Length: 408
Image 1: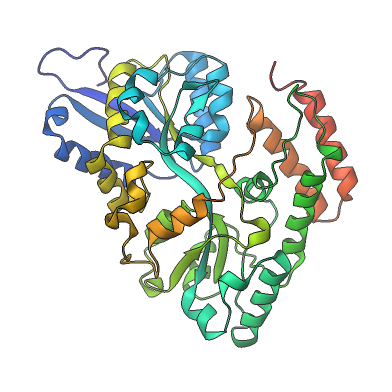
Image 2 (image 1 turned 180 degrees about the vertical axis):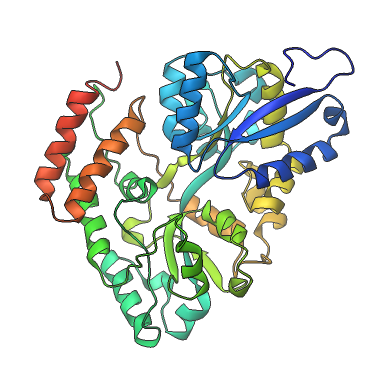
């Protein structure tokens, strides 16, 4: 049972809410406590599944904060939600805990840890855009990912591969659109949905229009798989050679390995996205936050700061997940930059290169609501139920009517 201030000799249980599964977190926590026996004497973890995605966890956190009951000590979100919860004043500030580590942290990580110059989050993973591809098939078909610069060339590469592998697909953009697919594409343009004063203007924003058009070009191409992400069809599509490429976030290296596809071991490599669309990120990154209403917020902050920035803890996390630490020292550390036992490339080297193109969408306190609205009308456009201008105008009108000003 969680205790607000454990008596001497008693352990405090820290509740940790995560997605999309608990296994990796339980493994990391156990290894971390084994590595730190002094902490193991006073702390253990209870890992709770908050849902399949960050939106599910955010919904549960909102409910817990409203009711004041079962507020978790540690919550896994994406940077997408940080402005909402930080502006609402429901997160525990972490500046005092981060101070001793601050000089060691990469700037990209700091950018997803702050709101209004206060640290409210710890980095679970900075998430640049990474292109996963079947290195063996690409080489056999004479496709060099470094020569694929544009969306048109990406589609052409897929068509070339299909000459030898007729069922091979380069991506699986479907309806309903995955939010991270659209936001990764949009984030590299620098566009937002409103101006700095909170006036929605996406209907006239050329970069938002361009992103809709890019999504449709890929959706309409002949190199898309119908296997929807996170469906029962997705994993088999990798195993049987239907999906030979994914434009996705760097986080996918962990999930793909967890698919346990022995037939795919050593066949997949990674690179930055094609030049035309390589800038951006997936939600900036994955973060940990500690609610101000959590019973054990001080202890949770102390433990999680060490887990995120301690050199030995970083190696545990890398060994379990492949996630690179948010530490400057990792860039030159052979531990992270050597050959990988599962992938046909070095995780560290690819991640470092992709990080050069990291851009973060200008998230605001209403970003979760904005995304739901814009994705609804993107799907209408993709299915040709609405023109581009109609879809963008409808999305803008809904944001104005349902949100008003996202900063108020």
